[in-house]
Image 1 (tube, rainbow, N blue to C red):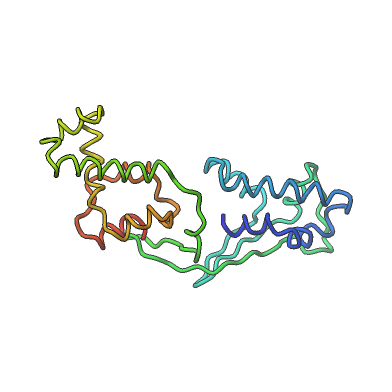
Image 2 (tube, one colour):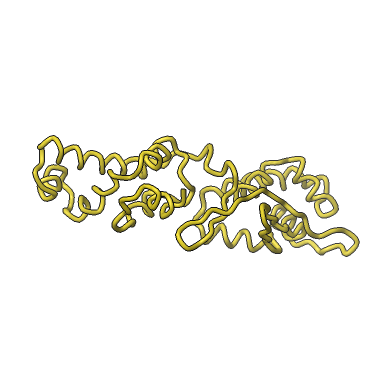
Amino acid sequence: MQRLNEFFDDEAGLMRALTDYVDPSSVAVAIAAARRIGKALQRDPLDQRRDLLRQITNRITVEPGLLTISVDRVALASLLIGTGIEPDEATEQHLSLTCPISLRRRGVENRIVIPGSNKNRDADPALIALLSRAHCYLHQLTVGSAMSLSEVAALNQVDLGDVSRTLPLAFLSPRITDAIISETQPAELTAQTLSRLANPPISWSEQADRLGF
């Protein structure tokens, strides 16, 4: 998604991609539509983003150290100007977008990592609030304002189950905690995924592996 976001924000690159398929008088409209799509790729639900990708991509190839996205120029131009376009056999119909990648093991699986993909992400208040709540529960137990999980639940007016699920997150490693606070955690680590983490490992290295660090 990051590479496509960069592409939709690159006016010169878009103009090169649209050459031969979009009339000069429609280029401004296409550029404006591309920017809207770029924003949609960042905020729309995952299923909608997948549908969009299927419309404009021909294939995605993963090779050692490199990911290549083949964009269908005809489908792209049709989407941006809102009308069907006939392919021209005399011109190259596909455009290749590339970005460097690395593979990082996560449990028994390998995960694709794009350098810099964790930077400049919008803050996730819910994720930070979840972590803060875990440390709040732990503090209440350690200073004696609550003597049991039930008392913590009563003190905070939450269900006992919420305390039981949330409290273990106070024992995440400093590396993971710092990443969440500084908003550099893996993109897939959200409040929802973290709250569903059952029995976080005690080992910091296992925590990192399980959470995609």
